[in-house]
Amino acid sequence: MGMNDTPSADRIHIGFFGCRNAGKSSVVNAVTGQELAVVSDTLGTTTDPVMKAMELLPLGPVMIIDTPGFDDEGELGEKRIKKTKQVLNRVDLAILVVDAQVGMKKADDELVSLFREKEIPYLVLMNKADLIEGREADSRLDEGHVRYVSASTGEGIEACKETIGKLVSVEDTRRRIVGDLLGPSDVAVLVVPIDSAAPKGRLILPQQQTIRDILEADATAVVGKESGLREMLAGMGKKPSMVITDSQVFAQVSKCVPADIPLTSFSILMARVKGYLETAVKGVEAVERLKDGDRILISEGCTHHRQCEDIGSVKIPRWLRDYTGKELEIELSAGRGFPEDLSPYALVIHCGGCMLQEREVRYRMKCAADQGVPFTNYGITIAYMQGILRRSIELFQKE
Image 1 (tube, rainbow, N blue to C red):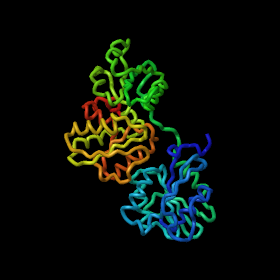
Image 2: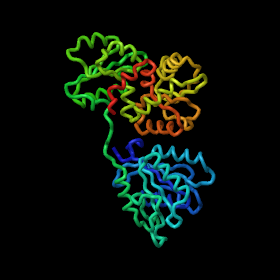
Image 3: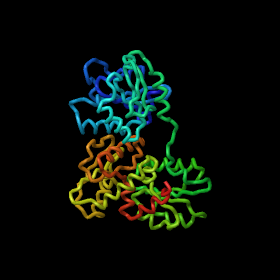
Image 4: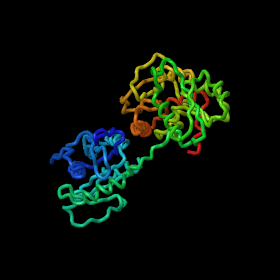
């Protein structure tokens, strides 16, 4: 697999920020060793974030995002901050380029406070260091975050790359789906309905991934349909460690599974592995506050062909209206189409996100958080409305 085959969502994203004329584009070019950004003497040549996939040693495959000047007069105020926050929701490391001759401006202070608010590792590069005499510390910045560089002479650029490598730890901290909760002699029962919406001849991705994860834990996966579940459990020689079900048959399965056997759903496991289970559990409480006329966004990560009884377009809207008794306006988004402006919505209900990388799902979650909009997912919403959410997250309470 060549360097350019690394999916963009798996690359480490590094964002470059700064005021116009701080030499940001020249620094990007010096750090990456490639003519990546437009360099010219006119203020604010870069107007939209420029994204470029590349190899940056010692890090490996990265995505460099070069952003417009943060002090660009045309976009002052909230719009500019919103745009910057959206870029920040995608980055693993933020680099602020400052003209060392001028020092930190108000816009630079604003950027640093955004980095801190979003808890993003950051570095401040004092560019044009060859043009200044003394280098006194700026009391507003922790010295560990500041490096002096010169894009034109190359001073400090190599050291800067090494710092970038240290700031972005690349170890694989991927969460397990469920394997970390199972031991070698454990049995997990998976309930998989085979209905008109199931793909012909195969299982959907979260089901495949969960089976794989259980096997990697040296545990045993037993797979069956909801219709034969009671008999299957009765006929098993040992009590299963857990039952994992498709959310759509949650209510039915919950009745068959004795209270002393932990029960959860694929959708809840997906929220856990994508790192937003807690947010989604908090977000679903918004269902209680829905009023007539509220708009709800139901967002699907893939663009698979829709069945007439499809979960996102038919079942969840129907269950929501039945549960709340309110006149709700439901809107759907699919695939990569996710609205930038979420402010009109009272709630965002996202699919499990199996076809989206964790980065994209977390990006959407952060965008909702920025705009104060509750965010949850299909399975958690269904479990909540059926009164079994508490039971289905008991497995993860310690987390």
